[in-house]
Image (cartoon, rainbow, N blue to C red):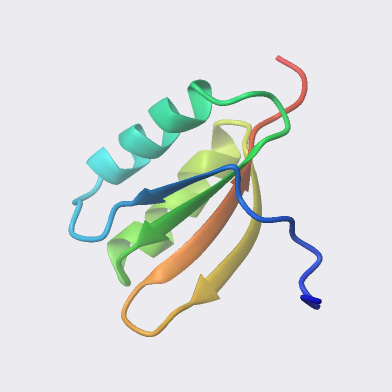
Length: 84
């Protein structure tokens, strides 16, 4: 059994190598296609992407549940809001 409190993501998006702000735009577009309450895992590069995207998502009303340093990239878990 996993000790993580997170469920497995409903979708995954690999945005390594994608520059800002395109990585935020692609993440937001993918989230808008998902069901309310579903979980998206996004892979982001270190530096500007991991510094900017989580803050931008939070300001846009999404819940950033976890950020994990995976050595060379970051895994970001984002939850779609349940209410519009």
